[in-house]
Amino acid sequence: MKPGILLVDDEKSIRELFSRYLARAGYDIQAVSTLAEAREALAANHYDVVLLDMKLPDGDGLDWVGELRETL
Image 1 (cartoon, helix red, strand yellow):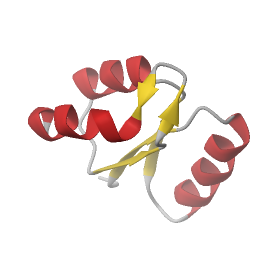
Image 2: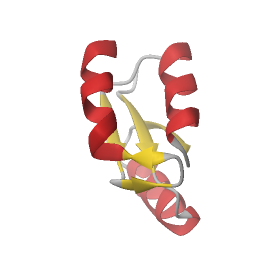
Image 3: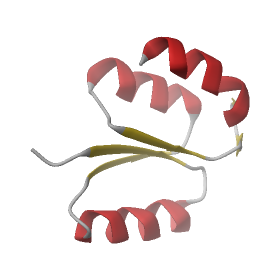
């Protein structure tokens, strides 16, 4: 089973670039653009790593880190 990474970034080009690179490196990637989508993804799947943008359309990534720690 490949290690899973959740990538959260509102810039499509960043999501695509990192997704391609990490997939080629052997990781299972799910990329989303908002904190709401990230919460849904975490509720449905397990991830080994979360790569999180700091400024997102629906909140600050750093503010979400505390919530994320409780979830994991």
